[in-house]
Length: 305
Image (cartoon, one colour):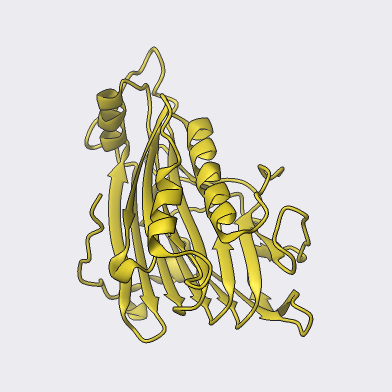
């Protein structure tokens, strides 16, 4: 599997956003720092509606000192016109796992798509696992998701983005969709080192029609997709070991996975397609477990939410 390195698209000027859309902006900011005894605490936090930040948890399934935090929403999902931004910073020596309380639903409507921007920064000797639950697109929903990562060469990162669709028409009475269905997601991920060198840039545009065709080619009734990236700490896992660890995750009859190395052998990426959310969950959890095992960290149990 080849990871394309296209030119970065600049964000639209703020003046181009209508007042109606501007009224639905929201933001959150998190910063984790290390304690003198190897723990991690939340040194800075800020959020506006619809974000809600839970308290930091210490779970036995995580490495010693790792902070676990759920990033929640009080809005019932993403709505057309939403413009949401959240930033997560993990400072030197800190270790954090950030997830969501459940899948995020994207609702249909006007004007324009829902926009969600994620900015991650991982400093030297720090670790961030950003492993949210899948995003679910309702019929005619549109999502523009942008993830920007700056990761130090001595840091560790696990990153996941998964997309499911929900269309009541896809039943025995309404099989299939059309190219004009309107359900669409545009995903853009950019990962760079702190010196500005590009590690990966990836773009993915999907809609219900393309997912239906993908499902048909695999002999499934439906299809869901996900992308995962693992930048292991170089002093703990070498490039060849990381690639072999993720390639050991075997596909199943309801899911397929492809793994490739990133630029400069800095890490690995995986693209997953599956017949349903259950198969997708099993494959992404297996990737998480393999990464933890290779790093010598505790193998996590499936999280209860």
